[in-house]
Every structure is written in structure tokens, then in C-alpha cells.
Length: 611
Image 1 (tube, rainbow, N blue to C red):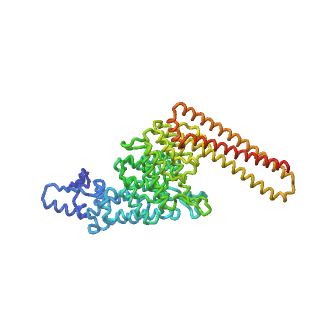
Image 2 (tube, rainbow, N blue to C red):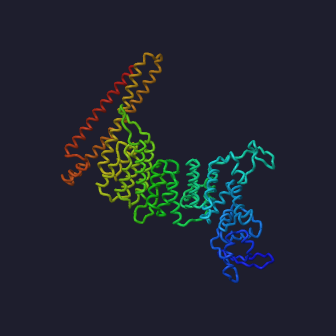
Image 3 (cartoon, rainbow, N blue to C red):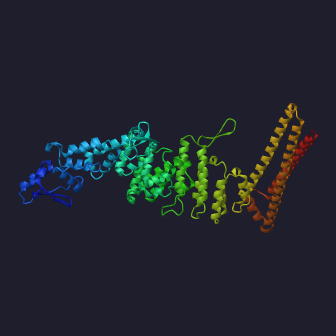
């Protein structure tokens, strides 16, 4: 590069790959370093004076501006070049000793009066510190810029007017309306949200971003706002987090952010581990779907076990906020055979259970009156139980899912967490259907997880006809179904008796005989319906019992005594005579009870007719 002044150049300055043909006097009059190097070159007495400057901050582009300044050419200071010029001026000793108003004083004045007063300029200057970070640290430029940005981010922008004016938005009158050519239009400006700076700081490199976030925390910015910035930064540089992002205003706003530089897998892994250190270990601050996205990305990138464990612990704190789609994480390891990572879900569940015990959860206790008292965390626990049952139903068709792994995950949920066992029964039924080769002891082992007393009427009906279930479970389901029916019938008669007694006590106060007669007719109809339904159920039970007797008799005739002994052992009975007698006794006792109930109902009906 040549500078034409009418005089031939007498010095060549080499900066990187570029050579500058300059004159000695303008350089040595402004720079102490250039004065020393030119003097050393003259002492060597070489024909041509060549000076090599390999370590100039900012390289050849910055030195070109320095050379123009030395020649008296007016240069334009901007937020993009002021940091490089300030570092280069310090490196070349262009201070006040070598001329008043030298480059050091001019760049320092521009930094203090222009750059540090503006959010946009401070951010742009901070980005320029990356290439000259060591020099900027020595001059405390980086620290001053970070402090300025943190102070501005912690201030309400609606009060001081920035970044409203800086981002090209219209001016505002004292009354709050928009100004056009100095005239109030009457329109009001929208309030600036607290996340206005997310997109700006996401353009910083990771080291500078970490320092800025730490400074913002020290300035008292709320943790939820910090977490929002961390989430936006992660979405920009970790493509896996945007895979399931829904379309909308937030996605379109962050879409421009995602157009940043694509990091290598090693850099993404480093970023993920750094984000793990920055994210607070507190419940509810980070969205659950973001945590699952980070965990999935950590498994793909083979992040450190500590990072994966911390993410699992964070998810475990708020597992009740997760969805079934979140839990369905594919297996990214070649050593695992299952389609989904069941072990990871089990670890997350254990973290949730441990946190529930620490925060005062646990099984509901029993009060003085014998009634169950729910713990404060019973609702989240119930939600997690329903979520795990749904997850078990989704992973059950996997033929590579071993029985111990399926059983351990199902058994990890406490018994009190499931209000009904319908979801667990559905998952076990799907597993038995997808694994027909299971032996009978294994089927009985996994079916012991089901509490037949907590099955709904629909589930009981399905289980009684389910050929995949062991015979012992079917018998238990039939027994508890009959018990539920008898309890419901007895409770209905108890309610009827209480209502009839209370009606008799208050009958003296009734003045209208017509109203009492209508009530008696309605009660009579309810009793008839109850007796009819009870007769039908009793007849059905008698048919089922007779069918079981015939099947048992056929089996005993065909296979002999040894076959009958095996069947009796499976059913839990000792001898045939005891079982039959027990069944006969049950049927006869039930008939007697039913006859008593029918006679009682007839007596009530007769009394009502007399009334």
C-alpha cells in the first residue's frame, strides 16, 4: 500500500501479509514504538528500512487507520473499530507524549462519551473485543462494556426511553403519544417487554456471554429473565432444541436468532455443558420441554455424565409438568436394545420421588377418624403416576423390553399415587399381548402389580374376559367385582332406610298428603328396579358357577387326579371337596341374603300401599 505525498517512501512497514510504503517522519512523530524501531533500523545501516509489526491488534486493517491518523487524515471512529484502534494505539504508544490529541486520548474519549452511553454501541464494541481480547482485558475495556450493558439491562427501558429510540421506533411526547414531525398523533407506544435484549446478547461469543450473564445476576436481574436469555441462546446454537418448536410469534421472533453460525459438535457439547453450569438448580424456572430437549441433545453429543445427571435431576423436580411426548426419548446408545430409553425415565422418576419425600410428600397418612388425609404433593404424584402408566403402555409393544425393566418401572410408582389401576392394567395387558412367550409364573409375577380392588367396572369386565391373564387374577377380579356389587346394593338399601326413617320422623310436619304419596310411589319404583337388577346379577353368578363346575369336572375326568391337584394349587385351594363346598356355601348364603332383602323390600312395599 502506498501513500502519495509528492515524496518517495523511505520506509516499508509489514503487517501480516500486507506491506505499507510510508514515510518515517509522520510515524515517529506520533508513535513511540515506531520511533524506536526506526532508530534501530538506522543503526543497522541497511539500504532499505523495513519494519515488521506482527502483533498489531486488529491486523493490517487497523494499522491502515493508524497510518492515516499519523498522516493527519481524519478517520471515523465507530463502535465497531474503536476497540481495535484503542488497543493498537496503546500497543504503538501513541499517547500525549508524542503529540497533543493523540490516538489514545481520542479513542478513550469516544469510548466514554459515546459508546458506553448506548446499548447498541456497547454491544457492538463488546463483540469487537473477541479478536483482541487479551489487549482489551489489559485496558479494562471488556469489563467496562459488560458493566455498562448489565446496568442498562437491569433498568426499565420504558422509563429512560432506550432502546426505543435506538431501534428506530418513533419519538414520544411527554404525554406518551407518538410524535410525527413534532406533532402528536395520539397513538400510544407499546410497552417494551423484559426480554427485549435476548436477541442482542445471543450474538456474543460464549465466554463474553457468560461474563455478561454473571454481571446481570449481580445487578439483581430476576432469575426467570436470566433463564429466558439462556434458553434463547441455547435455541440459537443448538439445532436440536428447535426440532419440536411450535409455530407462532415466539418461534418467528426466534427464527432470526437461529440464523447464527453453525457450531461443530464439539463446540455444541462445550456450550451444553456450560449452560448446565449457568442454569439454576431450582424447580419451575426452566420450561420442562426445554430441559428434555437439552437432555436429548446431551445424549446425542455424548456429554459428560455429570451434565446428563444434572439435567435428569432438574427434570425430576418438575416431572409432573412433563408430557408423554417428552418422555418418549429414543435410545441413542448402541449398547441398548430397547427402542426408548427406559432407564433414563426410571432415573428421572427416582429423582422425583426423592424430591417428593424431601419436600414433605409421601403416602397419605391416616387421621384420627380413620379417613385418609392427602399429602400436599399428592396431586403432582397422581399426575406422575398417570404419566408413567401412559409411558408404560407406549413402550410395552417393544419386544426387546425385558420383564425386569418393565416391572421395576411400574413398581417404582407408589401404590397410593394411583387412584385407579386402569392405566397399569392396560399397560400390562399390552405387554402380555406383545410378549406371548412369557411363562405362567412370569405372567402371575407381573400381574401382582395390579390391585384388583382399584379397577373400575369397565376394567373388571374386560379383565374377566381376558384370556391373556392368569386364572388366579381372573378369579380375584370376579370376586372383587361381586364384592363391589354387593357393597353398592347394600349401600343403596342403607340410604333408602335412612331416607325412610327421616321421612317418618318429619311426616307429622307435612300438611300435604299428596306430596307424601308421590314420594312413596317413587321409592317403590326405586326398590323394584334394585330388586330386578339384583335378581339378574344373582342368576348370572349362578350360571358362571355352574359353568366352572362343569369345566372342572371335565378336566378331572380326562386328566385324572394329578391334573386336578395342579389346578387346585394354581387356584390356591387344597382339595376339591373344600372348593366345591366353599362355592356351594357361598351360593346358598348369597341366596338366603337375597331372599331376606326381597322380603324386606316387599314388606316396605306393603307398608307404603297401606299408607
